[in-house]
Length: 337
Image 1: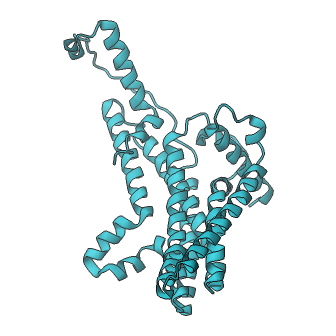
Image 2: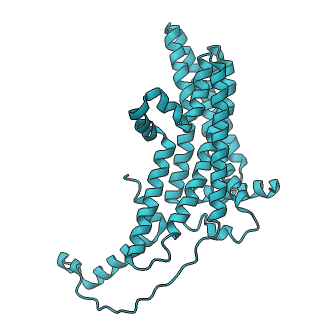
Image 3: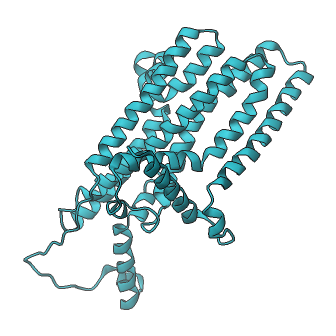
């Protein structure tokens, strides 16, 4: 593992992502400076700090019951880790839905002198750093709430757990990318319309499955119907970071330590899976051409019944064929689901 190459490539991926989503009024000189994200994070941290102070001021001035304040702290601190996991994975999912083939492609990566593990770790760091201002604002918001309610130890743990939650969401995106690459190329050896339909279904199923898996709520509902709500929450790994915080707030130090270690172990397991999948599907399947021994004659299209001209029908059929063969359009089909 070459740390210098890893950090350099993480910077390249981050700049590529920023330039792929920037607006026309944002120049390349701005998107090429990673320090801009750090400055934004500092500004948002100060903003969150002020917002948290206002929250505490409102609670103390309104003579809120101590039990109610403890419940509010429990909800805020416990909700931050699961929120960060869902946010980072969702942002990575949206990037996969909207990314064009020119911004980031595995084919281009294959020509660079890097290993699959370096690519996975660099991409994970890039995703985490790109959206790190959100971590700054939530930690800034939780800082005054934690110390002014005498939960400073929970806030210190929240810092580490938030970092783990961020990495879990980011490495989950790398698993999604490898599965999408596999789903897109798995049917490349099958010719005809069957290949197109199967590829569309494969990509949509991968997107829906991974989103449901990392959201956790669908899994909780399924397990809760079998064993109950409490056991269902414990059995879902994405809730372990949250349980580590809530256990500490409940003065259960042993459970907090166990869930913290389980959260860290869950991250390492996901990292191993991401490294394995990327190494397994590092080189994409080459394109293949299929020729049929039988011929066919084109008849009058049924679209002519709608009053369209021959030229309009030809253009419409060309656009439909192009849409079903572009991965950006195929991934958009999963949004309604």
